Image 1: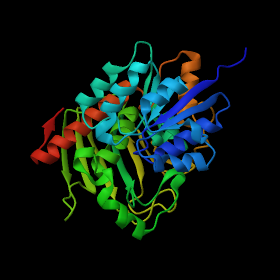
Image 2 (image 1 turned 60 degrees about the vertical axis):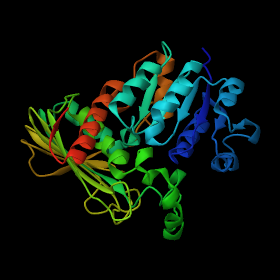
Image 3 (image 1 turned 120 degrees about the vertical axis):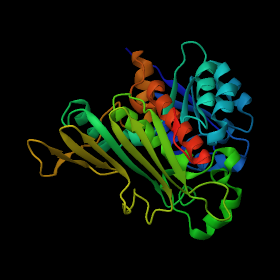
Length: 357
C-alpha cells in the first residue's frame, strides 16, 4: 500500500531550530513542505536559499499560509512565552502540531495548549536530546532494570549562549552576538528568556522519563543575577522526591559548546539506581555503567538510532501513520511533569525558598 505524503508547514521562526526541523521534513521520503510563515521575511530567507521551499510558499501572514498551503502538520518555533498564543492561533485549523521545546512559559499555558487542540489531533513537544543515541541507550538500560530502581538524576545542560549558533549549528562571531543580544527574545524576561527556561526543561523532562514518570514533592532553585541583563544565565535546581534528590543545572556561558568540544563540567546526565549507575553525555556514542556484578565503570555502546527514532519529524509521522500515541519526553504526560518542575523552580527562584509542586 502506498504511504501517505504528509504536508508540513513551518510557522514562526523565533527559534533557530526551525531550520533543523524543516531540513528533517525536507529529507523525509513521505513529507512535503508546503509552506512557511514568519512576520519577518528576512528570517525565512535561509530556508528559501537552502532550497527547502520556493519563494511563493513563504508567507508573512500565518493565516494565508494555512489557508493556501493546507498542511496536515505544523511545526511551531515561537519564543518560549508565546507557545500558548501560537497554538491557540493555529490549532483551530485542524492540524497536528509539533512545538519546539520548551513546552511553555508556565503550566497554565501548557494546559491551555492541550485544551486548544482540535479533537483527534496530536500535540508533540520536541526535546532534541530525546534523539541523542547515548541518552536513548541510558533510558533503555534504566527501563530494563540494569541499575535497579532509579533514585537520583543529575543533569548539566547548556552551551556558550543561544546567540553563538544558528540552524545546523552555524557559528556566529562574538561581535555578531554582542550586536544581536540587546534585541534577542532570549534575553527578554517578558518573552520567556533566560537559561532556566531555555534548558531546565531538558533536565526535568528527561529525568521524569528516566524516573518512570514520578513527580517530585518540592523544588528549590537559585539563579544568578547578571549585571545589565534581565534574565539568568545560570541556574541550579534541586528536586526532592519520595525516593531521593535530583539536581538540574543550566548554563549559558560554558567554555565550549558540547557538540564541538565537551566543556567541563560535561553536558549530560548521571543516573544513580539502587544497583548501579549510568552516565550519558551529549553526543557520545557510548554510556558508562557500573553494576553490582561489574562495579568498575565500563562503556556500553550507544549505536546510531534507527527509524523511527532518528529525529522528531520521522517519529511524529511514524506515530501518525501507525495511529500510535507518542511516548517518552515528547509525549504530553512526561512533558507536563517536566513543566510542573520548571514552574516550581521559577517560583522558588523568585521567592528564594523551597516550594511544593
